[in-house]
Length: 502
Ligand SMILES: Nc1nc2c(c(=O)[nH]1)N[C@H]1C(S)=C(S)[C@@H](COP(=O)(O)O)O[C@H]1N2
Ligand SMILES: [Mo]
Image 1 (cartoon, rainbow, N blue to C red):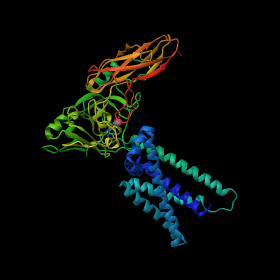
Image 2 (image 1 turned 90 degrees about the vertical axis):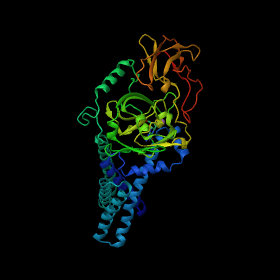
Image 3 (image 1 turned 135 degrees about the horizontal axis):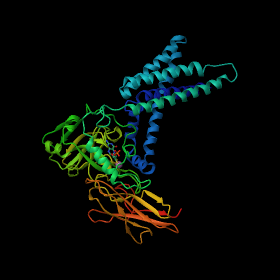
Image 4 (image 1 turned 120 degrees about the vertical axis):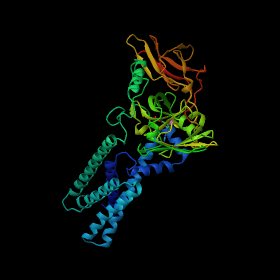
């Protein structure tokens, strides 16, 4: 092995070990050394590329960025090991050289770790991982040997050890991510959250939703499980915001700027609302649409107390996300701190998110920390990137489930959603749009912004047919037939599918 490839191998191994050690200790939190690099990668990615990667690659786009961030992190830490491996022998050939290489590398890694994440456990873990692996590389793997085949065996052994270490680190970090409940995170009405919120009304509403849901194989219920609820945001690693120290600033064009704490919110008029969210970027028959029962307080009382004088509003969040829209839309808005009877989970905006009735998911800002009233229109994060996602949702009828029944008939079903306009009816065509029949519409859950289920039975069929579905909203408007792509204003059109006998 020549010196050049030895340096590269040393860098890869030690850099990976440093990164893996930080992950093992911190899990997927902002203190993981890759987190700030990932955020920088996203921030530096040209807007057009962000938009294109979301459209073409879906969520894979952000995964590529995350991968790149890991490569950069491994490179940065690995470079430290290489530099010290080179520095040591220049200074001294004896044992001092070794001290410089191992301890110097550890110190520099610790400093880089602290610069990146300002967390001692994370930085120390990285330093430890880097120095231990560097020592192992130098003394166990690359040391020259005259025994035939030994060098190769050492190499294989070394890489197996690294892979094993990375596996354990990954597993430990994952465990940590799951076990690491945020302060105040837990289930309402249990010992983690005693008495904060009365869970009886939530349970009653969850029960109501269960009873109102169709019993149909493969059809999602009216309330989505937290684990199934879609997640869309700009982060590779979500922020961890402590409810205890969190506060919401109300600023800008207001008579009385305010600061609202978590306790202030809990002391307000707590309500439980069924609300559906849908992402403007999802495909026409996609799955980025879900419903939960959210616990929180109306935002109006806060706006009234602050005395808003402008007519636009900017919501800002701990992940530097920001979205702007007419203040009017926020007047029936909600500040949610609970979801399906649990304290709002981190992935959905812990501790507090906004819910804006009838509007695209993107202005339902998570990790909310500022409401800024404006006199003039400004662009939000996605609008700067060409999207028009701050308005009311389009009407959509999903054809999510197709079941071939034992008697040869075919049951089709799904969910329909039109925001605050509501769904008046869903129609199904079994001949490609020639003739239409009204589908069964499930009961309407209480609320002003909730989807409905529909279902219909077709057949028995002798041959394949094209099923088309469409809805009429509560204002009497038929859902537009013309198909459009999600970008820039959300997908439109009638969903169709070919079905036939088995
Ligand atoms: N702070 C913050 N809020 C955010 C986002 C984000 O990236 N950051 N993404 C938005 C988008 S595009 C959607 S569709 C919804 C998704 O909410 P969910 O992840 O709880 O389903 O959150 C919105 N709120
Ligand atoms: Mo979205």
